[in-house]
Length: 121
Image 1 (tube, rainbow, N blue to C red):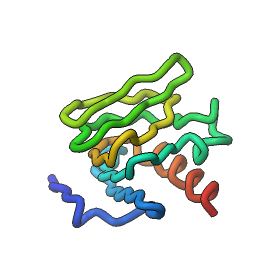
Image 2 (tube, helix red, strand yellow):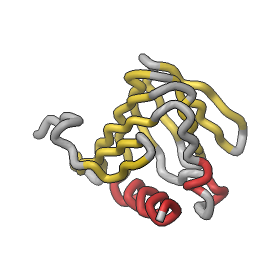
Image 3 (cartoon, rainbow, N blue to C red):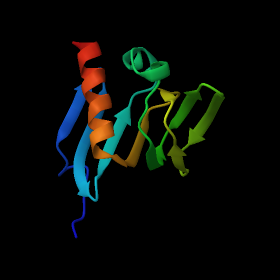
Image 4 (cartoon, rainbow, N blue to C red):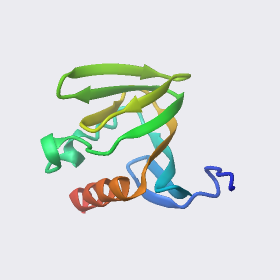
């Protein structure tokens, strides 16, 4: 078994204050340490994916901040101290500077990250 820290996890995506660090955790899952500055809206970067939303499921814990999660059926706000499951079909927006740790299927999440990078490029 291995333990993971933010500092030991490679940066996978960064820019405009966004910091996403991703590490394979085993069993086809990865752990991500994510920082989104207030005002970050990932919806534009998800355009072109099915429903223009993230198709990858995530299980995680919000360490700091507030995130508005928009889905095809509505939206919900998550706050620091809450654990979550975000099913396929979501787009996050940081209402405050936010830090969270999440676990996701590796291949699915890397495909989303590659799409976001292509949108930014």
